[in-house]
Length: 429
Image (cartoon, rainbow, N blue to C red; front, side, top):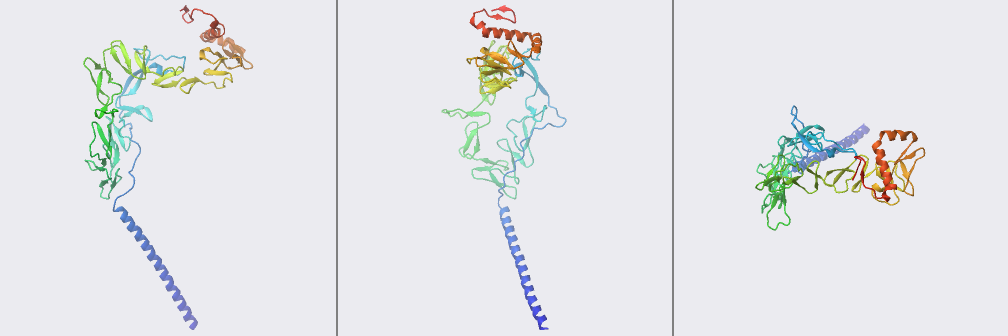
C-alpha cells in the first residue's frame, strides 16, 4: 500500500512538471506571435517601401478588324543591290533607278512580329505600362496614369515613384518633389523656375523639352531652341521639325525644308534654284536619281552606302576595318591576297587590286604567279579541269574577254602606250 502511494506521488509530481512545461511553451509562442503581429502592424500603419510595379514595355498591337491603310514610297533601287556586278533595275514606271515599296503611313509603324501589319506609333511616348493608340495617344494600364514626361507611372496602392503610399491610397512625396495637379503622382520642384522651352526633370534641375536643344555657349540667354531635322534650308526653325519659309520659298509635299521651285527630286537636300540641289551633310548628289544619296567616301567600293558612313557589303564580302574585302574560303596562301569572293590575286609588290593577277581556284607562288591545284590547268585567270575549259569558253564570253584583256594589260600591255579602247562598244577613246 505504501509502495503504491509513493508511486502515485512521484507520478503526480512529474505530471505537474510536464503540464507546466507545456504551458510555458504555449505562453512563449503567444508572446512571439504577438511581437510579430505588433511589428507587422507598426510596419503597415505607416508608409510602404516596396518598389513601384513596372510591367512590360508599352504595346503597339494590331486591333481586331482594323487594317490601317498603307502608303507607297519610291526609294533608290541601288539600296536593293546585293551582288557587286549585278545592277538592280527599279520597278518604278517613272524612273528605272527607283523601286516602289509599300510602307506604313505617317503615324504608324511596322508590327515587330508581323511586318505585313501596321500599328500605331507613339514615338518616345508610352514606352512602359500602356497601349499606343491611333493618333499617337497613350492609354495607360489600370491603376497607371500619364505623368508630366508622357510616361505611364503607377498610382497608390501599387506605388508612387519619388514618394510613399499610405493605406488610405494617398501619396506623400519625397523632399524636393510635390504632388501633381491631379494628386496622383509626384513631380520635381525647381523653386527658381525653368527657362524658355525647359522642363523641371529633377529637384532644382532643368532640361530642354523634347525637340529642343540649348546652344553652347548660351551667352545671349536664349534658352532652349527648337531643332529641325533636316535643316530648314531657306527658312528658320520655329518649333520641333517645323519650318517657317522665307518669302519666295515654299515646302514641297512630304517635306519640311524650305526651297526654291525645281524639277529635281533633291531628297535629303533642298533646291537652291531650279537646277541646283544642295545636299545635307553626309550625302552627295546622284545624277541618276536627281537626289542626295548617303556618302561613305571611298570606303564602300565593294558594297552599298545605305546611310552616311554606313556601308553594307555585297554578298561574298566581309567588313574588315572600314572597308569591305572579299572572302576566300580556302585562303590564298602566304603570297596571295583575296581580291574578290573566292578569287586570289598574285603580285610581288603590293598595290591596288587591279594590278594583281587573278588566280581563281589556285594559289600564288613566291614569284607572284598563279599556280593551279593538281588536276586543273590555267585558262586565262581561272584554274579549271580540262573538261570545263570548253564549257566555260562557250558560256562566259564576256568574262573570258574581260579576263584576256586584264591578263594582257598585266603581263604586256602595261609596258606600251596604247590608245584606250572600249571593248563593249568597240570604240577607241
